Length: 394
Image 1 (tube, rainbow, N blue to C red):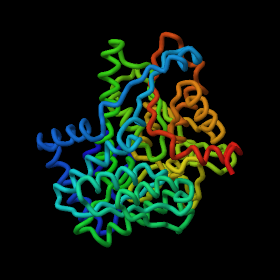
Image 2: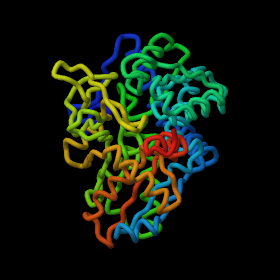
Image 3: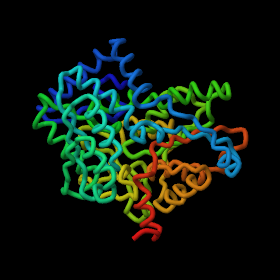
Image 4: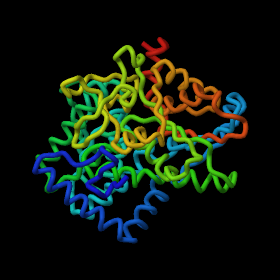
């Protein structure tokens, strides 16, 4: 894999954009390469992660889950970060990069709202203008996060095109960026999009996996048997997996959104049912028809109903280094309740997919195994929606 060859991961990745954005993307890559070589940038980023985001996040031994599932379970508590999710890791890095480039305005897409909240938070802290694009359907599902973004000073733009979800919000954000490339920095929230975004987001999120390695060696003097994470576009999973790709003893397992079941057609299970195509500036796996048109997707999770997956994830799947499993809405909701009652931790419905994967695959682990599940965000935003799903709230 050579991610520096215009962002290629095997046959995936690349940079497929119009002329206006090609120039902006090259400008971004040049600025990122300079930042990578500047120790001051790395030190500043590390300081903000520590003093503002609250890292390192806790690696929590879930003792009741461990007894119940018959293996040693740890939870990587990204839900404890400032703003309540892993998204702040990436946003702080990109916001610092934006200021190095002299940009005065941040824009972002968001589905579940956590990336939008993180972007609005960074913009408020650094005194930058902020516009967030969010599908109308997701704004209804995640009204609390809409208000949080507005409270932080961001303007939230309702997107009504297509299915009015994350895919359409991303498309609108790309269009907006092409209109105002001179003063605007597009903060992409996942390991998707044209090069160099998948690499940039992965690099800023790898702090998750780097910390897991250190924490595991400190606690057990060994690496974990398996790492589990949810995957929509795939940033928290890639951040978890990346530092362990070269460790074949560590199993990498990702849970994607199976919705009402892959056979139903109402899902966002890209690896299970996707094919190779080009969309949103990258070549990867997408849910599309025979003519290459992106098909509607569905998930109970607003953060996972994206019709594609990051190009590096597609490559990890093809090579067999990581395994991808479909988790249905029902399984995710069961896991949402399971973790809440078992450990007193209410996870995001996105993260619940990873918890569900562990409960579903528990027979594959022994008492001697150590399994780490990344809890990518907290579930406050989802309580009302899950309550309605269960018929507890009208």
